Length: 217
Image (cartoon, rainbow, N blue to C red; front, side, top):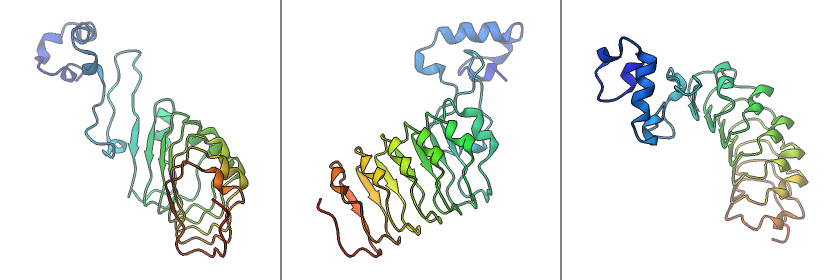
């Protein structure tokens, strides 16, 4: 099976010492040929694939997992096997009620997509995701953002529409890299007084809320 990873090679010629021969063949190829798993699209259904192993240290290299529309009630434990390399996780349209603490050990995570689930809150441990750039928690039952969301300073896009969120914490205005914020169909009554600090914000959607006034922006 290992021999089949080398394109254009005839498997029988590796029967004597497959490990040694494969390494030798790999050294002759360009750097891009060393990738263990090629992605044709970011949303490829990798979550259901058996990853191959990288010959360098036998480490599995997975950066994207997609478990959307899988009728899940909890985050699959297999996700935690890739906490060092995982960059994008899609859990769209399941029945997940809470996010486990171990998920927030995935500190390389750049995109977390969990819309259309049964979440009631965002745990404070989300502050551990210091490299997170995109967060989608739309269509859940989240009532508020934790104050320490401010630690996710790399966030550029937040989609939190269709949640019973009545207010944003003051720490929210420390997300200075935020460029897109979607909070449609929520219960927002006001925005933080210093909301104008979000100077990079280019898209702000606040349809179907209870806002009566807006701060100076």
